[in-house]
Length: 270
Figure 1 (cartoon, rainbow, N blue to C red):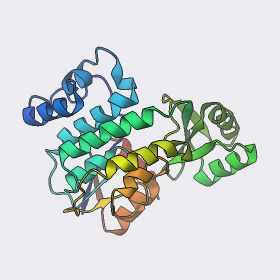
Figure 2 (cartoon, rainbow, N blue to C red):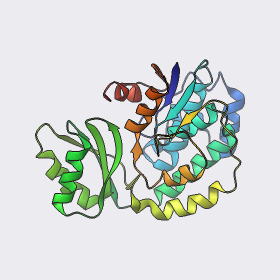
Figure 3 (tube, one colour):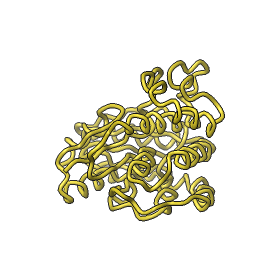
Figure 4 (cartoon, rainbow, N blue to C red):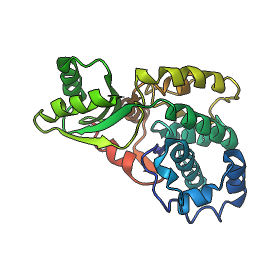
């Protein structure tokens, strides 16, 4: 059995999707209408260097993921990491492309309004060690935000406290801590105001039962409704649980659009 994976924010780069927009002119025109600007210009040339801005990076990544996914067939399950879950929901028949793009645009706007945060990737140590280090530092504004692999996690929260926590975690044997260039405390309780506002947005959209199963990166279980997309803003990305669920369902082959980020993580999960 095969699963198609969709990555989230972080894979954006100037020039992405350059070969796709002419192949899918109707979808590209629809995206331009929904977003109010040329998605091709943003992705291919990025003249105003907006791809570093969450408000533009998320719709851009989502749409390029979507175009790449149009050529993929024959998958038994779909899953996406954070933002990529919207692509999985489109592929699984839960959301229309236009509605998903509208949701992603609004999601990005609300997330970008929560500032003063920071994130750092932690490699080389289990999440239990990271959590223990956070407890021992006594910091209350730092959280585990992504559980990406057995020894690869992300911390996020108040920018100053994340810097302090990163120094403490870096002292652990085998640990490597790398700052991530974002300004928001994504996937932490500090995103609660954005979650509350996004919940109101989600209420305006229709979600259909999945034609092909989608596993949520919030719970690591089958997607069961839009509440999960609201919770996603302030809850950690449970990628280890997601992959564990997929394997338990009999998935043995993992394909990925837009790079190999998630595929490489799959191999790092026991």
